[in-house]
Image 1 (tube, rainbow, N blue to C red):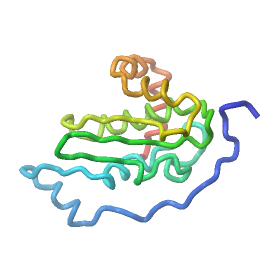
Image 2 (image 1 turned 180 degrees about the vertical axis):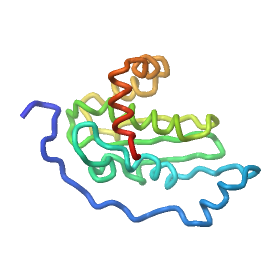
Image 3 (image 1 turned 30 degrees about the vertical axis):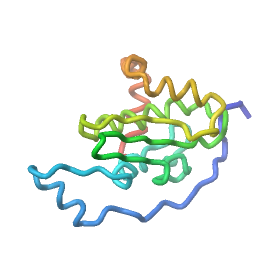
Image 4 (image 1 turned 45 degrees about the vertical axis):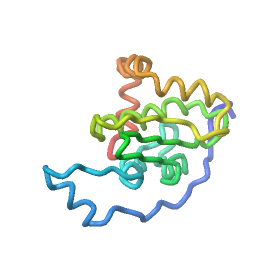
Length: 157
C-alpha cells in the first residue's frame, strides 16, 4: 500500500446530536445576534466527504464535536481534526475543506483556526501553518482543479 493512504479506514457511528428547534428558531429573527456554539460548527462540518473515501469526516472520526472550541464573545473558533493515519496525504486537503465550509457558512466576525489534533500527523506543524495562512489558502483556491475537489467534498455537506 502506498504510504499516506488508508485503504480500509475504521468507520464510526454518526452522532444523533442536533440543535433543538428552539435553538434554530432564534436564527429566524433578523434582529437577534446568532450565537455560535460547538454543536453548530460540528453540524456544518460533519457531512463533509473525505476526499479519499465515500464516507463523511464524522464517520471516519476525523471531525468530532469534542475537538471544536468556540468563543462566541471573543469571535474565535478553533477546529481540530484527526487524520485517520499519521502520514495521511489528504490532511491538508481535508483542512482546506473544513476552512472553506466555515468561510462560506459563518459570519465574518469569527476568526477560524483549523488545526490537526496534537500528535495526530507527522507533518502537523507545517500543515497547521499552511491551513491558517490566508495567502496560501487564497492561492490554493485559485487552482481550479483543487477548488473542484474541495467543492466535491462539500457537496451535500
